[in-house]
Image (cartoon, rainbow, N blue to C red; front, side):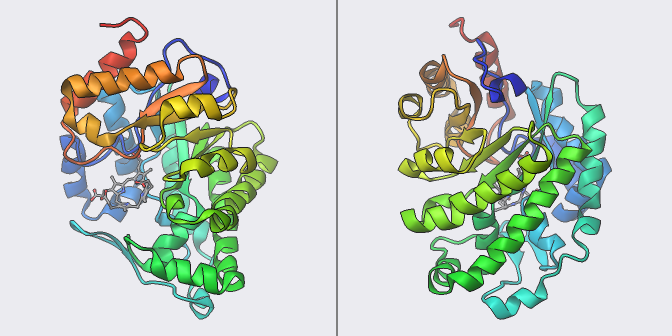
Length: 341
Ligand SMILES: Cc1c2[nH]c(c1CCC(=O)O)Cc1[nH]c(c(CCC(=O)O)c1C)Cc1[nH]c(c(CCC(=O)O)c1C)Cc1[nH]c(c(C)c1CCC(=O)O)C2
């Protein structure tokens, strides 16, 4: 995985899956029930280490991703957060500059100390050849949740703030940039070997706003992290960026880019810098579907991106209804590649 991220072409690409730990695994559901709340799971290193290791035991991926959530960052800034059963995350929304007073960095690292402890323990708990991935949400996506207070279809509140009061909204983004860079540095210092920035809602912005609120804040985080850790590769995942993927990779400074489900791997192979490692991008629903469709789609991606540095992954996270056997089947296809079965 680290070789691929450094630009080496591997005959069999390394792989891991976004949301490889989670509700599709019965052992996760069991531990989740024991932990009580989802945040208890994230902030308890015993539980978080165990959940991180669960998919590795079954499938031996090339990388482990720290078990946590992107929303622990607003939570550690003092924004109340709850995960409601079947409804997803809910935060007390921040709707303007006045509300920024409700946020504070005073207890940021103290709140996140269990996350750093989880990374530290994982760095010795996982096999030496398995890469440990740390992560954070990118500022735009974090701001989406902080301002809307939940997932949204339109992202109208956050957009109206960003478009109508860019200076005020910029203060929220600045805060997220600074604490996120710090947060990633601490994860790296605790043992994370690479970090991924999830920008799940990058795709909702028009081009000028995309540059201002996706590319620029990402570029600043990359620069801040690289100032301390120049050798740690940073993977950017600007989901839904469409043709703006080219500007994103040219200007954000990320070392590798995650492709979402809608990006044609053939387009990526032709249009993204040939030395740039890419990651992706099987449709999670294809994994849930299984069978011939899964095998064909997987091999199409492998074929399109053979010959360039590449990390196989999904185009978004594993969905809950995915049969664990389908992940086993995918693993078999990837391990047999490039020998067709
Ligand atoms: C937007 C976002 C979130 N979280 C994350 C993103 C970015 C990627 C993406 O777009 O999916 C990232 C994330 N969330 C989780 C991880 C853990 C590591 C992994 O295995 O990938 C990672 C990397 C665990 C989780 N995060 C969450 C769960 C499910 C919680 C549960 O057990 O009930 C898990 C395993 C909860 C969560 N957390 C979030 C939402 C919208 C939800 C609810 C939806 C859902 O439940 O799938 C915010």
